[in-house]
Amino acid sequence: MTRTIADLGKALRRRETSARQLTEDALRDAKDPTFNAFALVDEAGAREAAARADRELAEGGDRGPLHGIPVAVKDIIDMAGLPTTCGSATSFGTTASRDAEVVTRLRDHGAVIIGKTTLHEFAYGSTGDRSVHGPSRNPHDPSRISGGSSGGSAVAVASGVVPLSLGTDTVGSVRGPAALCGAVGFKPAFDAVPSSGVYALAPSLDHVGLFAWSVEDVLLGYAALADTAPDPLSRDPRSLTVGWVRASDFATVDPRIEELTSALLARAGFTPSRVDGFPGWDRDMFDVVTTLQSREAFEVHRHHLDADLDLIDPEVLARLEHGGRVSAADHAAAAEAREELRATVRELLGTHDLLALPTVPIVAPPIGTRSVRVDGTELEVRSALLSLTSPWNLTGDPAISVPAGLLDGLPTAVQLVAAPGNEHLLFAAALALQAAR
Image (cartoon, rainbow, N blue to C red; front, side):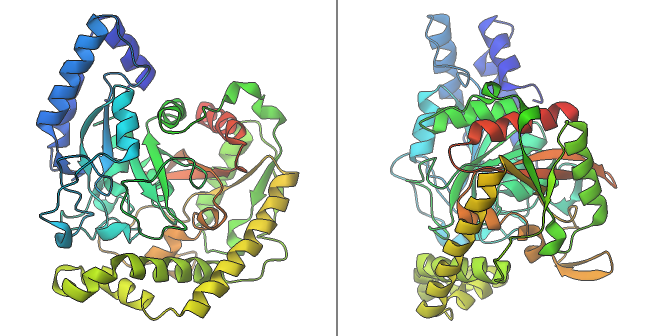
């Protein structure tokens, strides 16, 4: 299902297809084990929603662009009557009593929810290969990671099962998998999309985000979830001032990825000015974000540590136990450093409409790989995948990942960042990049 939501909507309204047919196609593909995108396929619920959508459209009722469109949600988001496993055996036997607010909004817009997607256990990992449901697999090469933690949602879109899916992004869990799998991934500004009914990992960093086949589809999904809908046509993208953040100032990046992403910006007509790191901010970025995330994740999941140690993946367990050793003073110092970074980025976004940089510094490594060599340097995969996305969770700014082309047959991506309230500029530039690609 690699057609856009707009194209599918036209076909529905011309009676060239039906919500039932689209749903049956999506259900069939969702059950294909090749990529393991889904932890749970809701056949009965999806068929009921599709029948309702067809009936309403036949009677002249139209809920908007998502009416009758198959979508998927990460299995950390509550759907009434279904389990929310969070990718963990510790959650088996629990059933959600009500829909998360984002699910309610999808249903209100007529979307047909196919099922719940695979995630890294507790959403606490960037690789997507630690889940009680097994690893989600990259559609470009099933032997490679999807990224995490929202890997299944990225795979569901990139493999063509659905044109739109929801994930969560704490330090890059939407944009990273989108980049590695070749989808568009959007992290809205902090609190722009409601998180009630979404199981937390680190509440001060968590965002609900979207994956789609195209930038236009992300916009349609975002309009259904948020209180406002940005108008990217209100500004000529060629007039935007873009700062190219030199990623190598705070991460080791495959130079070929920097070349691909900067070349896409040039093809789209942008002439970015160079931004050297974060001027005046001399903290260790990854230490700040992991300190905040570790302590908050420990607090959220400490009840599992009391009762379910033997059910938690050892890698995830080690991270949770580390969080218990982060002191309140260390957490407070990291929170103070975050405020300093926010002030620095506010200044940068006061002189630039947008900031641009690669989304991730490497292509997808094989499943289970925990270190890779890049440009002569040995990198831990987890920290590498989060190095260029996590700053924007610290600041809470909206950020979008747009595919930039293939490297050794695997996707790369460029990331754009704007100040809250300037989402229309973000989407204007993302549309220009998509057109240039």
